[in-house]
Length: 250
Image 1: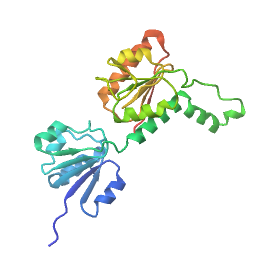
Image 2: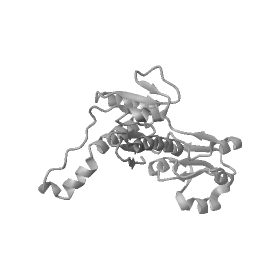
Image 3: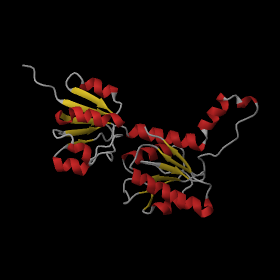
Image 4: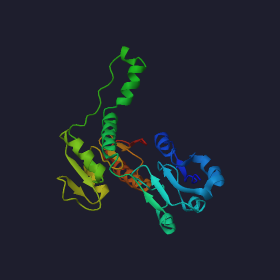
């Protein structure tokens, strides 16, 4: 007698992951508005959830999955999961730290350069044929800027390593100072925002002297708000141009 296959709820667009799950598990796919009707049909039988972390797994949804044993989050951040509710049920929650550190760091620096050097605008300028009428205006540079990093964790350290190649001063803000990095530490975010004229990263980064606030990845929304508020306060003081916000989910 063939045993019944374990039923898995896959949240988000994860075709590669689902292809690996399908030979062994019964996979149900859903995202956004499709989640509720699918859970209504299959919720009592679902024993595992695989998620990209973009769909909210709150206490209400977890109560509709009485057989759930594990939530596998394919990403570092798990702020979309009600971890306390899962813990009360004895549901295991996993994430994937270290997997994308270098990719996020690369993308963060790419976003910084694209924002400061106005690469998207220059691309549109060329595609529209405006180069036939004149040159794209010269813009700001990364030179002579102090780079401020918001956070000095695994990703923050990777970003700092890349920025060191640009030979710019690097400082950082975190709750506690690290002894394994040579950069100046700021305990207060606003204090760092007043002193930097470059960028701050991880999970988001901001650039003054422009002034730019760029979220390099999803990040925790409350922390993003704290970053934005700090740099907006400095911009409003008259020491900076209006704040430009660039957001990217990767």
